[in-house]
Length: 230
Image (cartoon, rainbow, N blue to C red):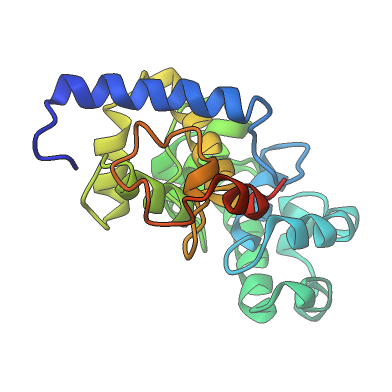
């Protein structure tokens, strides 16, 4: 965080950034395909260590054969592994999908619970996944601290912490609670398309005047624009 920046100034800057990201990414949303809370829960767990694109390629077959918690609970683990093989870590992910199904059936009547404290008791589900499900499937605002949100929150001077819970609290205090889910999506879009981990496209970034890290990446506007994705 900026040592010379007052708390009020930080809030005002954060809200300007939130609006600027909204202008840059008016269609920012969850990029996982889902039709219900169960599908989003499973897809989010599967997205670890892979891309949303790959998950979206595998989940149609998965949900066609195993459409709900009961079906996943009783699934042949080898069949799950075959479907999930393209995602990497497929054995662990297959066990998680089966375990989630079993836990939902045994403890929640086969339904995805709408409370964070319940979601994080499920196999393979932490606060990050829980906040995705709550925000996008249940409309409960929350900040999803994935690698993009963590990286950008630090670069923007909103937090100096690496602890996801601390980041969730510190960044969450900067915008209206109702905006937290959309802030997550906008930051993730920006991290995937402009503010890259290795070489951010600073010269083509709409936040250049608000970002204390401006200049750590490509500053030439033309070269930076060539880096932009999407």
